[in-house]
Length: 291
Ligand code: GUN
Image (cartoon, rainbow, N blue to C red):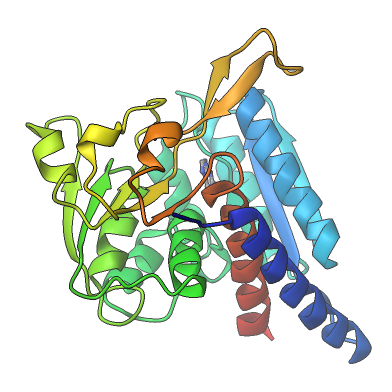
């Protein structure tokens, strides 16, 4: 079993980006600037955005975090987006999801200038992705592709089973794994809450990408020998014995599934750090496209 070490690979990527930023500075160019809007006080979302800001500092990017209250109206958020769209200092920005109930997420995502949409969530960018055109690929799926690439995991002709059809992970992942090229050329099955007899499907998979958010959902008996296992789950599970009062738990029963897998991502330290590294990569791309 080989561990797909997202912590190490994301560090390598951050080092590569740091070098790019140094070159930009040496030439007197403006460094990439990422902004992140966060609406409300969700603990996990605040932690993720803080990690994104910290990662910007680490590679030498400028960053701006915009906090808005839980009672922010849709109009107020749309105004803020317009401001960022028109601000020449900002190369790319994200709106951390989920948003409070009073706000229509699709409407908000459609208001983002596609050229600054470093999350790749705008329908124009999502469509380009599906049509093999160059664009911003959503950071988590992009991070998974990068892991498969850097570990040379064969995907051509393999049966990839994606668990979950979220707009952020499952849906784009299912498209990307079936695209021409590497990583890609897989035969893809996407499963979700209405899928019947999921074990019958997962046990035929060469590659399983689980983005469900149910701790320890994927058990050893659902997986065939030598399968490649990608665990996107990052659920906070209460644990009184840990310093934070919770532990981050993946979708995969790692202890038992890892005994059968050929490659597997740990949680934490697998897909999570890759997501942040690829957001930085998209921000670098946005900056290059704008200059
Ligand atoms: N919420 C969970 N994952 C993501 C992500 O990749 N981007 C944004 N903006 N929000 C998220």
